[in-house]
Image (tube, rainbow, N blue to C red; front, side, top):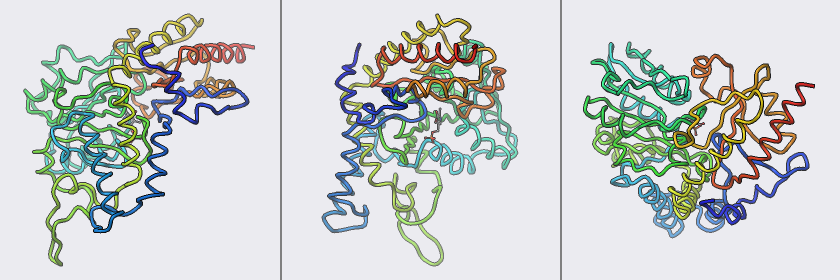
Amino acid sequence: MTLDVARIRKDFPILERKVHGVPLVYLDNAATSQKPRQVIDALVYYYENYNANIHRAVHTLGEEATAAYEAAREKVRAFINAPSAESVIFTRNTTEAINLVAYSWGRANISEGDEILLTQMEHHSNLIPWQQLAKEKGATVRYVPVTPQGTLELNGLENLFDARTKMMALPHVSNSLGTINPVEKIAGEARRRGVMLLIDGAQGAPHLPVDVQAIGADFYAFSSHKMLGPTGVGVLYGRRELLEEMEPFLGGGEMIRKVTFEGATWNDLPWKFEAGTPNIADVIAFGAAIDYLSDLGMDNVRQHEAEITAYALDRMASIPDIILYGSPDAAQRGGVVSFNFPDLHPHDIGTVLDTHGVAIRSGHHCTQPLMRCLGISGTARASFYVYNTPQEVDALVDAVKAAVAFFQK
Ligand SMILES: Cc1ncc(COP(=O)(O)O)c(C=O)c1O
């Protein structure tokens, strides 16, 4: 194994827990990851030692909190190789980051007759904001089809955009199928054609080395809670020139420079987009999560997940009647394995697995249109992270076999 998983597991208190009297096997990482002690400690340390509001205080606690909050921003900047910390905006989650772009950039730049290009594998968070925008503006939404292998049907890219395409948004990695999309190639073509590109990195940043400059996207959005950090924090990276031009998404405190009864001027980036008191404690603890992942090395994280996923695909393929979704090539997918059995509801599989201590997700995974394309209502989905072991994959396979046997009785 690439990572020292035995050592990593000691950092995660929750992994010692039992469920229904058996050890927890946590395989629902695409929904949210578990948190290491370093992150939990950073949160507690903040509240016990320097809890204060940021940016406005001249007292010691306020200065310490401000320094730690801005230090977390710098950690995120380095983690995704953004050219400057001004282009790293803290939001509540990926969903809010995407909405920020759809409202602020979208309302100013999308007009009647324009086309917004998405894919059939969109998470609802990267679908609804664009549908709302299109409806409001009289624009259209087109979807890049998904092949039976679970990859995007890009047809050599030249025909991807048409003259009306103004904006494209797509996932770096599909949360339902695990497909890793060729975002660098798409970004190159988008730049050539003058199309704005947003990447939904909710399943990218936690699992792959991400260099936003090398990818060349205009916007990249992701969530702390899927990458060992707390809930309630997301990131929007945006190209600085674009962010400079954009109007604020939310108005209130912190995002202003000067306010009169007649109007207001806006603060500098990134604070222009961070109205109100931000989630100070969780941003700081997210910084600890970034440190943790950086210490492991994102190349190693990716390698570990590729190994676990290849092992899982291999073992699961031998279960009679199983239907596996997504690319059979583990090199093409992140740590996600979606599966079904004929005449078995994914919720029933998930419920039986829980009695074996195995936590997976079942349902449409917030990708209802994709499920419709696949002709199903949902899947059972196991998703892996840095602390998962081959033995846990074995436990999954045993529990799945037990579930099938239970319902075939
Ligand atoms: C691909 C993808 N996009 C967006 C989201 C939304 O993330 P959040 O709920 O943190 O906003 C998720 C969460 O599952 C996701 O997997």
